Figure (spheres, rainbow, N blue to C red):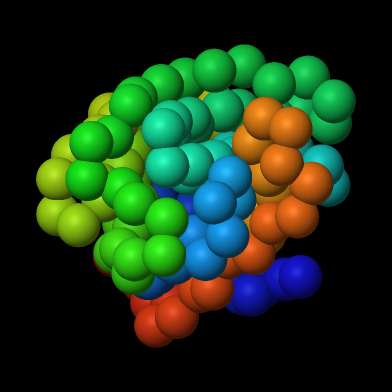
Amino acid sequence: MPVADDTFAGDQSITVDVNLTVPGSCAMVWFRYRSGRGYQLTVCPDQVELEQTGGVILMTLGLAQPTALRSGTRHELSIAIASDRALIAIDGISVIQAAVANPDLASGRILLGVTSSGSTRSAEVRFADLDVRAN
């Protein structure tokens, strides 16, 4: 589900509130996404992972195990991109800092999604208050 069409290259900030309403659910945010390529952030209760995606190939850029992220609770997720660095924070606490320096991925769409972790079959995430800014 596209949320915002092509964003401007350069510095950018994305904030959105997420609520992992069903245990085992994970929120997904793709940014600078175009033609199956871009950056993919997966936020689960036990793990946050930032990846560069090129179709079916994923390359991990950063991985963290947040302590404050709980299912059934609303959390603010922020992605701040300055120059060629991304800072991922949950509730104002930095969880991942990584390079997003691929010149072919300097702009693109922002998409929101949901997946499940482990053997959980159902997943549900509520998103609210999406704010996207090009700086």
